[in-house]
Length: 180
Image (cartoon, rainbow, N blue to C red; front, side, top):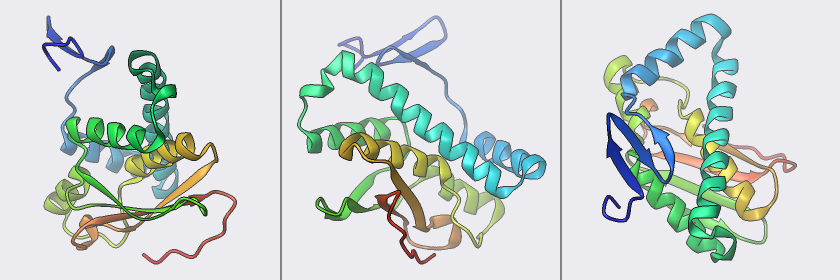
């Protein structure tokens, strides 16, 4: 990626796929979450980080559409491509289970979401899943895939003591019971 120019490290800048990046330690991210929860509450903080995750994915997709001609890419290949980028950025490795194309329902799991791992190390176990940023990224990914507004609910979380984080994805208009 360095040889092809897709990643450029120069003059203290990190540019990946023509987007500027910086390393933001997970502990600082978690501290930001803690501060926001104290100022605006837990639900609002979750909503903010979900919105940021959605924004990030949609912005990246705009750049990648130009750079990699995504509109011509087969849809499953688009998912694989995006997942590899997410992994490269240190966001964990993701698997897709129970992929129901007709009903637009997918289960996504990761055994190594860094925010959940660090949260548990710093604060101990929590009662509620914490990965709202990842939920936003997943919602936006499947919005682009299905061209339908999607909802992502984290139903298992490493920070809660589960062996992996699990995300249930389904169309927004569908009312669905999820178990946490």
